[in-house]
Image (tube, rainbow over all chains, first blue to last red; front, side, top):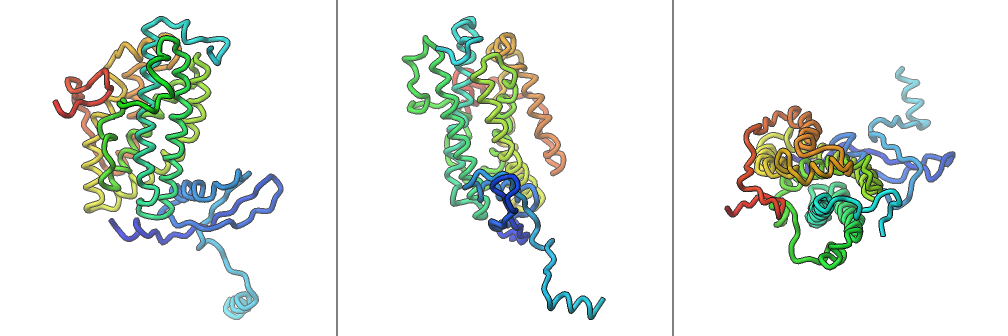
Length: 77
Length: 248
């Protein structure tokens, strides 16, 4: 079996809120080869609470915001 | 006492009662065995996430069995035959569930094919006049959506991986294919037909088989698996045990 199947590189961050209006909080991560399996894995891995809402996002989709990086972008527009 | 004031199993003709009893035990037994097989992968799937999902699906299947078997208490004449449906010497499950899966491709092909076959039957009870079955089937079909996502996702992943993974999956899928199609019974099967006539299910054997093919064909086409459309092995189909008699 291929390494990608055995060790999916795509990391997803998992977020949830307990009730409507609660903040969306990061509750963990999962690794999956695609979005659909990521949905299943997030649901089954973090089903310890009756979440009001669960969201996942590819970890790579996040853009880091820090003073140094803002300055770096500013210096190299 | 029936759980539904508008319908009681006892009001059905005896043949329909027997057919309904058979349907519940066949679906329940296959779910029970499926749950046991899934459970064997709660720490043996290729990734930890896949193992956790396998454990969750095992819990679902065993829970569904637990929800289905109490319906057998509705059958006055069968109360001496079954206690809770689980503690029995023989199960009416398909033959490939008798043994533990040897490889991950076994798990994935059974998850993809049989899980969806059972769901196809349960979905045909969504408007059943047997309210206790209707309510349970609706809940089970909702929970099975995750099983379908999982089975389809892994089926595509293994098929697209090529090489040995694809070859194993294709081999296992072909080995299961006929028995899963037979699971819906011979065309015009009297038991399923009488359940349709009595508005317990909304389809007979051929229609259920067609609905199943409609569910799985897009994925099979996507991955380039061309499955046999030939004659099914009905001479080997055991109508009592509801499985292929592979020893014949």
